[in-house]
Length: 313
Ligand code: PYC
Image 1 (spheres, rainbow, N blue to C red):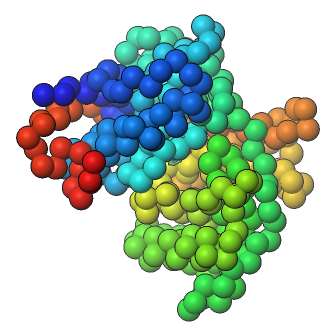
Image 2 (cartoon, rainbow, N blue to C red; image 1 turned 30 degrees about the vertical axis):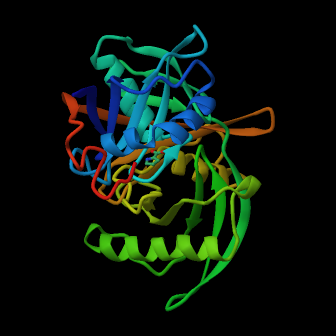
């Protein structure tokens, strides 16, 4: 019986499952190199930890790794129901909160190595976490795709640690009760974007889509975020909000240091700012996570669904 020690948390409603022990040995390379090994040889582990019958589509996994640099608190590789992620904002807030809960770190500054690069984080005394993310940038402005039944939809393609298509004018009403319709709309948009050949830098797949509308009660904006495996992000999405901040900065709509309050479809909020350094936009995202469970996952070799339903190893 294989045993996997985990700590679950949620950040603004979006779960993070931190794997503390029992994960695969990915070697001693950078997190980007270890992510490649993970993907090539241990994809079944990703599925076993995230997918039914142990998990659900909405969980984002985080494999805790020994860091390369002594100055880092840890390394981490993120994954979800469909794929591996280069970076995850809500996940980083969850990981730092979890490491604080375990007594492995104290309030203060902590570096975390991710496949997208090393991010600096701050665990605040009051439990909030700030993530100083990797640089974000807009790759393409005003990209238009034709969506059958809806007409032309225009948005920006931007990087915030993952690739995003960000859309302001979409004709949708961003309300919790419309989640099924919003999921269907954004999924079609993602497929249309791919079919039309629009990508991120180097031909990267744009696997997240975000719709925006003006916020209320102190929020600058409300969003709906479609994740790679068709689940929606319950949090405002840290890497997506980083991409948004980069677009706002590029349009001269947000000054360095100014706070952008991003609300999610479930009403949770992140505060975002950015600084300009070396001609780059460096976003910072602040949010709050809560630990929800400490447990062990068990993999029984005789269980036909041990790696997930419909998973072929
Ligand atoms: O917070 O960056 C994020 C994120 C990515 C996917 C789900 N959450």
